[in-house]
Image (cartoon, rainbow, N blue to C red; front, side, top):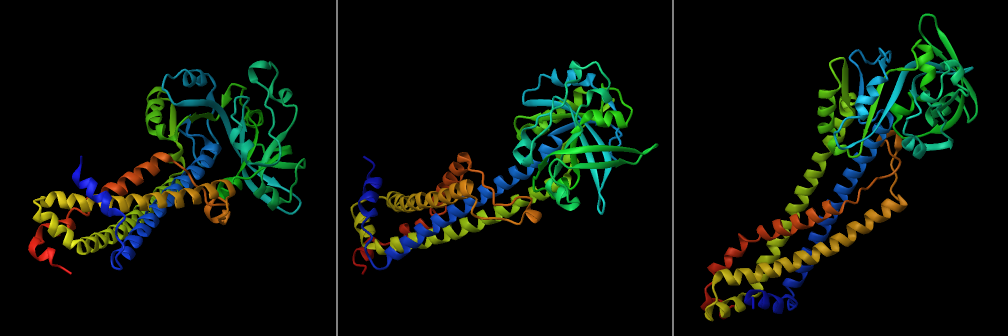
Length: 415
């Protein structure tokens, strides 16, 4: 039998004194609120990072492979689609999908408005899952498979359908199924007429006000490319955590004539901003731990003070100081665990309500999302619980040393 644990269990529910009970309640509340704040903070941080990251990846994929001259002018030197076979044949695990894309800068003009946009062309291999999830009106369009058609681009295009964002639609006063005219500044200038088949909204205003999605054959025709020439390739991954590993693998194997860039390299300012948020959560966690730790130290000292007579009797019976210290550390661990249970209930209740009902809203134009996103990761929750329990118990070892300074004769007569 573990004597220390047995005694701790016997006295754990016997703190009915006016002095200790309020301190115990305060300690439980402190641990519960501290853990709840840490769980909610991590859930919101990771949820926000995942939401923004997934939106950016939806526009430009995890990794882009282009010629070295790709730049912000959006006039790329074409690459041949033969490179698709080598990319799809790469043996690196974690690559989910490879697709072609085309890029062309253009201007949409209506009777009283004008808007500069980027026309992104997609092929029959395009993964529509992201844009389908962001559609607010209409539908996506179907791209004819190049390999199934021997005709040229002009004949292959049966419908000039495009997707535009709600931002562009509102600014230019366009509606679903409206026609629009797009101008392309080149020599000679080109004009194309499109029909709006769908309207999407992601909340990323910097992207929504730029990107218009069409068949890649339009870009090939505008640039006088063959059906085998594209601006580049997009690589989608199963897990974002594999980004650096797969990027290094792709970069080493695509050859000297092509360049690979990750989404972090393409948009460093956004990802630097997301990484800065980690520091905010670290500060919150440190503050919560310090508050909980100080409260637990105060509670332990009060418990020792209240049980001074018992300590004197145990010492008189020959029980060692280390065993008596273990009794009070077991008691403290019981209080901590009780606080952890309440903290988990409070945090998980908030997270599940927010996840399913989205009760807390955000201004989308400032935060890129219209509500507070949460990511319920049980591994994170388990680590926070274990860390709080272990650190809170360890921090009590030093103040429990006061037990060794108690004189058993004086302690027995202490009142």
